[in-house]
Image (tube, rainbow, N blue to C red):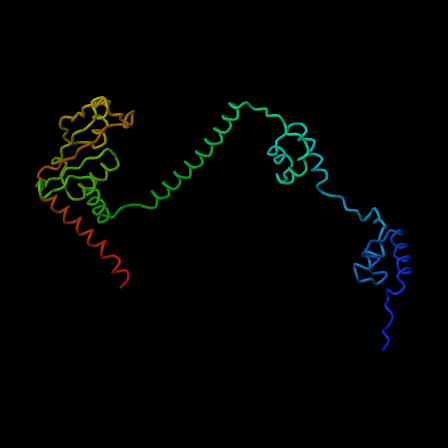
Length: 288
C-alpha cells in the first residue's frame, strides 16, 4: 500500500519559502503558522543560518544593572553596598563582577571591630526589648490574686525561703529571710491576709560590713513601713572571697520574725503538705 507524500517532501522549496519569509521580518512563530510546520526540528533546519530580525531580539532587563554594578565595583564598592544601591541579589552581583579586582580594604582593623561591636550591641538591644516585652506580657496576665491564690503563694514562698522545724532541731517559729524586695512585699501581704498583727513582727537587716549599712537600713525601713527593727547583723568580710553582690543595688537581706509563731508555723507546714498532696493527685483527677 502506497503512503501519501509528506508535506516536507520538497524540503528545498519549503526552505526557500521559509528564508524568504524570514528576510521579510517574520518571526519563527509566524513562519511556522504560515507554512504549517509543526515540527521544531524541521523548522530549525529550514531557518538554519538565517539570523532573526532585529525586532524579535528582546532587551535584557538586567543589562543596565550589570553595567552599573561593574562601574560601582570598579569604584571600590562592596557587594553589600551594591546590593543596597541596586536592589539585586549578591549572587547576581558576584556573577557580573567576579572578573574585576577586589576593592582595597578601606577600614582599619579597629574601625571594623567598632562597626562589628555596634552591630552586636544593636542586636543585644533588640533581644533585651524582646525579653522585656515577654516579661511585661506575663506580668499583666496575672492580674489580681484571690485570697486563696495569695494564701497558696505565701505557703510555697515560706517553705522555700523560711526556717523549718527539723527532727534534730525543734524550732516551730516563723522566720523569713530574703534579699528580694518583691518577695518581702508578698510575704508581708500574706501575713496581713492571715491576720498577723504588725506588732508581732521583728525586722533586722543582715549585710556585709563593707557595704552601705545605713543606706540599707533606711531602704528596708521605707519598704516595710511601720515595724520594730532590731540591731543590724554585720557579716565579716573574708579577704579571700571575691564578692559579686556589690554596688548601689546591694542592700543585704531582711529578716522577718513572727513572735509567738508556733501555731502559725504548724499551719504553714500542714498547708504545704496539703499542696504537695493536691499536686501529686492532679494527674489522677485529669485522667478520670
